[in-house]
Length: 394
Image (cartoon, rainbow, N blue to C red; front, side, top):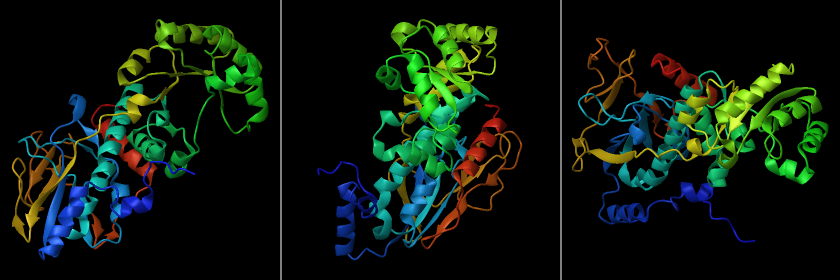
C-alpha cells in the first residue's frame, strides 16, 4: 500500500522534517569542535497579521513534548497567554527562551516553530470569533479545509482559543470532550428527502447525541425547520448552511425561521448557522435570533504567526544578527491592561503607562529536559477567556 505524505512522529523527532541546512550546520559544528557551545535562543515575532492588536500563544505543550529528555532549559510565558508582539518601545517580546548546546537542539528549530506559529494563529482566530459570538455556542468545523494529519492540532488550538466544541474524534480525545456534529447534506441526498433523513437519524443514532438537523438541502428553510420539529420529538436545533447563491440575506432567513419556530410553539429549538462564517459575518448575525455557529475555514486557515527563533547569547556573551537585539531577556506584562515589556533583568520594577507595576510573567517550562508545567486544555482555554474579559472583548 502506498504510504501517505504526512510525517510520522518518529520522523519529526529525528529531524527528518527539518530544514536541511540545520542538519548541515550540526555537521559543521561537530567537525570544528563546537558541539559544546552553550547558547540562549529566543522566540519572538515582529508584528501580528491582519492588524490584530493581540494574539493567543498556543502550541507550547507540544514543544515541551518534543523537547522532553533533551538537555535543555526552556522558559517562557504560559500557553494561552494573550500577548502583544512588541513592547511600547518597539522591542520584540520574547515568548520563549531556550538554553543548551546549540548542536543538541538546533535541528529542532523547524519543528518547534511549526508547533507554535500555526496553532497560535488558529487560537487567535478562534478567540476573535469567540469575542464576536459573545455567549453563543461556537463549534470548530475546519478540519476538512486542512490536511488530516493536523486535525488534532487544529481542534486543540481552536478550543484553546475559545471554541466550545470540536468535530473530530481525535480532537475530542485531546481536549477531553466528545466530538460534536449535526447532519451532512449527503445524508439527505442519500435518503432522498429531508423527512426520511430526519427519521433515520433519530431511529439509528444513539439518544445521547443531540438532534440538530440540517434544513436547507431541498426545501425552504422555514418549511424544513417545522418538518424537523414535527418529525423528531427531542429536537435540539436546526442548522442552516445555505449556499451563497441561494442565500440573499442569511440574517433575514434566520429571522424568518426563528419567527416560524416561535409562532408554531417551538421556542426551545435552537438555530445554528454555518457556511463561510468569520468574525465579521458573525457580528452581523448576532441580532438574528441565532443560537450558535459552526465555523470552519476562517479559523483553521488563520494567518500563521511569523515567530522566529534567534540566538541571543553564546558562551555567556550577547550576540545577535542584524535587526535583532542580543542578550537574554525577560518578559513583563501589566496585570491590568496586559501591556507587554522587556528587560535584561528578572528583578526590574517596570511601571506601565497606566500606572501599574508590571509583573515578570516568564515561568520555567523545562529544566535539563524535564518538564516543569502541565496544563489541561480546558484550564488553558479558561485562562484565555479570562484575559479576553479583562480586555473588555467579552
